[in-house]
Image 1 (spheres, helix red, strand yellow):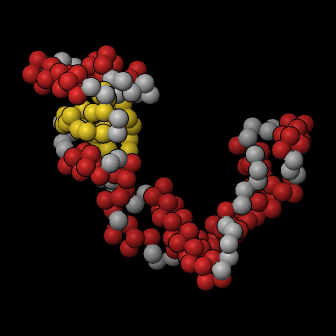
Image 2 (cartoon, rainbow, N blue to C red):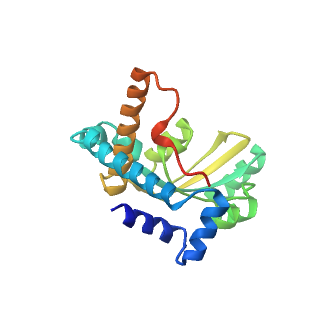
Image 3 (tube, rainbow, N blue to C red):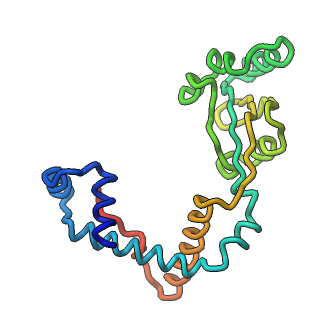
Length: 202
């Protein structure tokens, strides 16, 4: 099992040739033994996290379902309220296309070329006031302008995705429960360093 994890590690880093692996390790001052030991620690951590989270994942999800809801949204950001109000008016009253207006007027350089697409995000990734509006809106609904850090945002909700307990969320919850347990144990034992979070230096 350890050898498989080492092989997986080599595959993830595209180290198919022995020479490539040796060069990678030498550059970082580590050995295959270090990789194997790290893989073993991660394997034990996974097994322990499964044991600790046994019977707790479903109840945790039931109590925190809203935290895992996701929404796909776009926005138009501008520092000038007058500009964003005018953009809003053109979209609502004159039928201007939201995406075209985002490409033309948004000052968010990260999303402007993508028509203001922010991605599929969760509640905690948004300011509380914005999150409440997003998850109360219907797909296709435009809301704002909203005061945000550095300026104003006009939002379009593309789609909402109610949370389901899938494999990814199960892993997240299991990891969260493990970290909670680990924190309590470290406090109880007065451990001052995160022994389970050590990683091979890159």
